[in-house]
Length: 288
Ligand SMILES: Nc1ncnc2c1ncn2[C@@H]1O[C@H](COP(=O)(O)OP(=O)(O)OP(=O)(O)O)[C@@H](O)[C@H]1O
Image 1: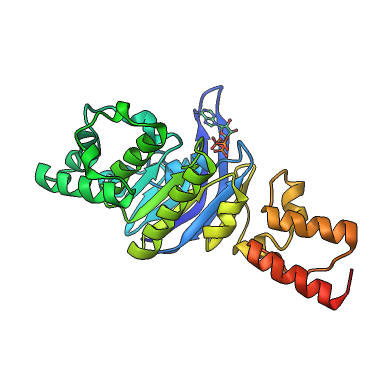
Image 2: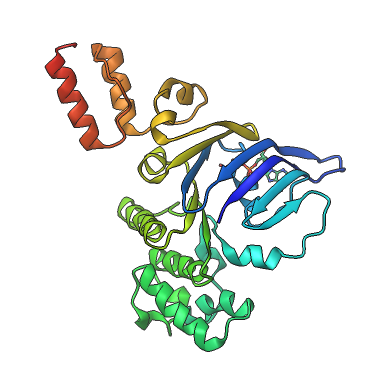
């Protein structure tokens, strides 16, 4: 499902003394089946932007087209439910939204709210639990008896049970340990590859952006500063550092070698394996 934003502006508390321009002149085209990472400083507008992607917020100017439906400022939109069904958002700390007595009821809540029968919702709950790598024997447990990591997975299963075409992930691994982070990120990537789910990841992790995304969008002061492949984006690491953003550790290491030992690289390395190969080549060239 394709998502296009045209000249989007968003002002919080418009026409009040507290009015605040959070997004302006935002243009982007997220093609069907792609994996996009959105990065940017705190306050650059990432969360505001992602709430537009399933019409939780409507632009105060401009328009957003989600699949075959367009949301325009100042126009009443009748199809918000359909949009919300097809674009699933995993918010930061999604486990805070668990509320039912059992895991099964919690996962079934979303689908049943959108008209899926109880039987089908239960089938979906089993499938979604499997997708997040959990055993169905926890279906009867209270979500509040689970560990933090398990609660996170159950909350994600609740979003997957809606069978969305697009998944929007807002720092989905915040607060998890490195292993838990990697497992969750790999799980989303597998879903993206196997089921063709368009995935939009808001992250502060340059490693994740470099590893998973086809395209990276940098937000800065409420608008798109730059977009490109991870390779394009990390080809100019100084620009990112000047913006106060980070770069992957591999690129940081390249910069250090370049600065302190004069080692020249032709391109950014986005994995350890790639870095090892390029360091070896540079040493063979003898240009240190
Ligand atoms: N409810 C609100 N009312 C008024 N201003 C808001 C509101 N929510 C966010 N803002 C402001 O809008 C701007 C964009 O905020 P937003 O939360 O979208 O940024 P962000 O890039 O997601 O930041 P973070 O990385 O910290 O989540 C900021 O200046 C913020 O202070």
